[in-house]
Image (cartoon, rainbow, N blue to C red):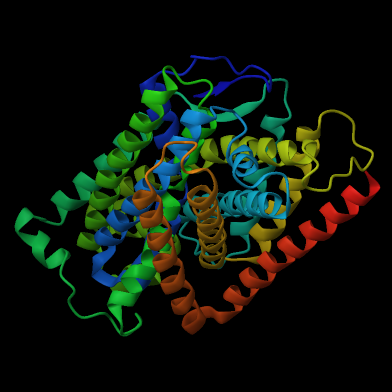
Amino acid sequence: MVIVMGQKDYKKGSITLWGAVGMGTGVMLGAAIFAVIGQVAQLAGNLMAVAYVGGAIIATFSAYTYVKMSNSYPSAGGIGMFFVKTYGKGTITASSALLMAFSMVLSQSLIARTFGTYTLQLFNIGPESGLVPALGVGLLIFAFLVNISKNYIIETFTSTISVVKIVGLAIFSFAALMAAGFSLGALPQTFSLGVAPPTIPAKQGLGLAASFALALLSFKGFTTITNSGAEIVEPHKNIGRAIIISIAILTVLYVFITLAVSSSLSVPEIIAAKDYALAAAASPTLGIYGLWFTVGIAILSTVTVCIGSLFAVSRLTAMLSKMKLIPHSHLGMKGRVQKHMLVYLLIISSILTILFDLSRIASIGAIFYLVMDIIFQWGVLRRIRKDINARASIITGSIVLNIIALSAFVWMKVQMDIFIVLVAVLFIAAIFIGEQYFLKSYLSKE
């Protein structure tokens, strides 16, 4: 069940601490853990669990700055408003906010393809089938129709739906571990470096650092909590608590999921089934019912998160449009700007879902998010750190961790799929150049 409310129905003090935790875990526990775990294995090998702990550490460092910003500027405006406070209304703000928006759009496509991939596992159809993007686009259309109905769906879910997903994956992990005869004595071997399979680049230390970038995708939804700072009870105290609790809960869950998957499949097998690793891991130990159960949780997660995520990115882009930071054309459409953005986002997400596979969508999304976060953290450190009473050491630590993860990830991708790195670099350059031209042209008209 999702909570619905109109665009203007933001009420101060309407979200409790545990409501915020439910919102954070509900959004973070989306497609990434289902779609990315195989890609994490490709980079980290048998250190998948360590990769998710690393992603959680980076997210925690990063979240510190968002919490401090939310405490000083509680707003429903989200990252766009934070950039305005940091850099003012200019090219850096507009371009960086767009990077976040496109990262969210890529997440939409990741969710869509994950939905298609896991649904087809019920019929023993592989991810290469043309039905995967077809089902993905169908989900996007469904989410669009829900969002343009009388009530707008926002990315705030009841604690019930979050608990269902968490408990469901916990049951899967526990059952798979028990069926595989896993014991605590096997943990040292699970976390040891070992020998990387031939399909994994030889330098596993570098691969592990690179895997942090992908693991981070399973945590970056914490920004949803900061976006709702104006609505959370005692925000100065509860925003930070909600983020830490959410990240802690999911870190434990993700570690057990990786242990469950690796207890059922070898690393090469996980890589071979990287687009549907959880479903593949369920079959050997839990049989057909385990497969159905896992696919059901995947479908529940992707559908609910897709609806809320589409609203969130439409709200962000509508805000940027109203601030005259991005171009906008009505194209003859009536109604609010956010409705127009929903149309644009449906088209863009559908194109990405059709053109790119899960691996490439996740890679571009990770690069966009890390570049955006580095720019944000640097701006806060250099410009307004004292205004928000933030510690320079923690912000610096966040920047360093982001740079390490991004550099390692890009270097590995250059060796494995240089095309997607070139696409990401060219797209980032196009955003900054395009925004500079647009703002210069708009200001000259003003």
